[in-house]
Length: 293
Image (cartoon, rainbow, N blue to C red):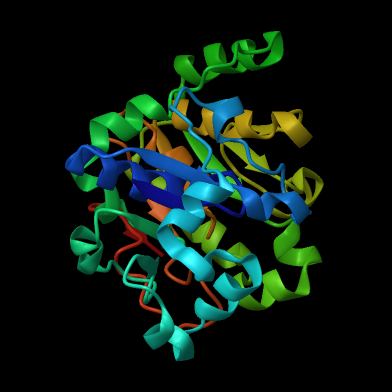
């Protein structure tokens, strides 16, 4: 079997699931999800995949993890062994993402493998795109308010625009890793969209909608989506995916909102600077045709 370690917000969970799912599909193997790290995880909404999407979810048991990792399955030991300096001590079945850009070695991992990493590239599931799209079908009914928004989105040349702040501002470690997209980026993105999209109507999503309203100053028809909060936050991704074009943040949440969009002529604008550490190779994060500003 393939066991994928899951942690982080919904967007991260989707990447981790997609990498494991694609590998399991192409090999005809079972996929299990190790969600044990969510037991003491205080950020975001915890493990959400099975609540939000129609994807088949099978949770790995401790015995199944141990069957692949043996003595290395203990949480503290696993944590230590994920560090690059301990790579030589890992079992062959213990697969840790070696760098941020696409790693083709994932295709040659042992049939029984435990995957840990972020796997943030479409290349990790390019051979199973149709399966991933089907798995990431939203399964919960739309609320009346969201259904009304869908009707508005369908009636115009809708452009989703995502401003990610939240933990990027409040959590010092996260801020040091990601940083924030600047207002200059958003103004440049809006200008680019306006010159390539006829009569754009912006639907603005954010975990700090008050900041967005105060600072964006969009000079085109726009609607600020402010009601999907807490356990309902995933609906922002759902609404993003229904827009025809997208301006995303340096966030896996809006990355998936754009990727799930089905408009064959969609325009996707993404920030060129995804992390504060500009030495990280992010070339494989962007899908073909996405515009980097």
